[in-house]
Image 1 (tube, rainbow, N blue to C red):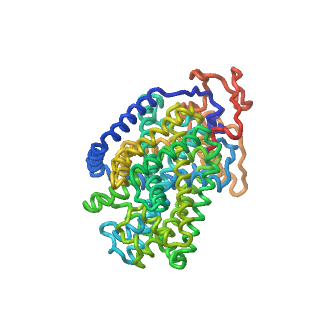
Image 2 (tube, helix red, strand yellow):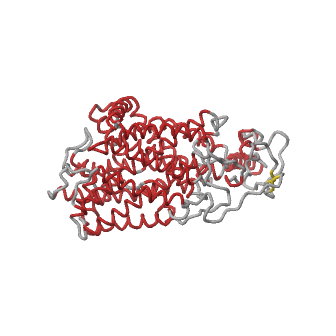
Image 3 (cartoon, rainbow, N blue to C red):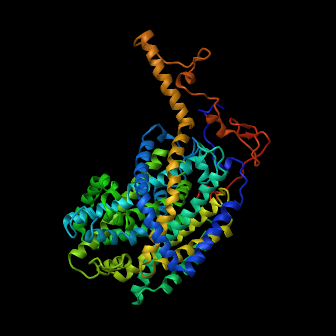
Length: 605
């Protein structure tokens, strides 16, 4: 078949032999178990090591995080509006599996998690009292808008462009190119062998990043849930309480994970986004409604106006700015980078059948809009209470305390606080559930339905890392979460840089791109020739061109090049070539792809 006519290949149509990747699994298991033992037995040593390594890393490589996130936004917007935007994340005739609401709900649950409640009220309040260095005076109207702009910057376009890059590349690779669902598979355009040493290193780094990134989220959820339980009981949160919460929720999410990814996550995700939107609406209606109505457009425009200025902050702005970056921006960028393999793989599985343009724009814009709404409502309400001099909003409270202090000032505080704890618990379970399955897939050569014991194993290790992070931070548990997350994201950030190059190269050889190149060249040349020979009275027809004068030659396309044809040549389970008829869909040796029920299809999540 001509490379410009291939309709795409899904992963289910190929004959992969899945199974445990002993090298990837073994290296990760040994390293992470050793780390957890070290962290539990000597948290102070881990804390001092991570603190020193973090200082060195930020001083020398902090700029890299900024560059990566900025370039991600530029690259993904450019791809969306280019000729590649019409390419489907699937075969030419595939349609989306989920409604827009369910799609966005699952994306929201995977990519946002507990942060909307943990940081939603506390982060804008913190920036209002202590604005970023060299910006505005604290506790002023300017500080109010700077606070929202900075918060929106951390949670807006930048992280979602990163997720769109990884998720789009994974969906394209698996559902249009038919490759295994591994991070290493994304580098097929630039690596001769994705299962060689470099590919294995990429997969190992992806699992490490996912483990630490998700553990940080779960640690934050634990802190917030612990504060909620303490609010009901009247006791100060303690480390034994936090460990108990982790234990109970771990049992819950492992039960969910081993029962099958398609059986509960969609329902939980839809429930969570509905409850979250209701919580935002409740605070909006019972809080300073008129003030928030005015703040929403002004805060959003302040974010857009200050975007480039906030992106430019680095070591060159002085040591105070570097300290701010370490505490806030660098932590966020590292967190998003560490989460990228997990969130990317998850949204890839639920975005099958959508065009790259639709996928990119919705992935970047819709969650950003929801987060701007949430941070404006929660943060604006907290800042209003601070300006009114209410207790708990003077900047001395911890992030987890600010949320429940805000709820305490609103009607039905007891019911609302209980509802928030439920939402946080669901976020915890869905994030841990999904991440465990993703890591199981990455350790099983891309198996979309990994062994359930393997899934549970990664879940237990993830909980162990969360425990170490909390113990390492001690009284200020958040510091342990931040430093360890940044450290693990640094090596993986280099993978993200290489991925941008590989993804673009992949798209340039897509059948749609080939057809577009042919069409542009053929139509342009035909119109010129028609005008030259016939003036206004000509029409375009298709007929065989003289030998060596066809469109492919003129357009510079060699349709026999292995760069264009190698990817859709079929092989058997052992990698040996086997014939395949694209018109009939028949394999030469009679093999047929296994059938899947709607509930266990690999694309379901």
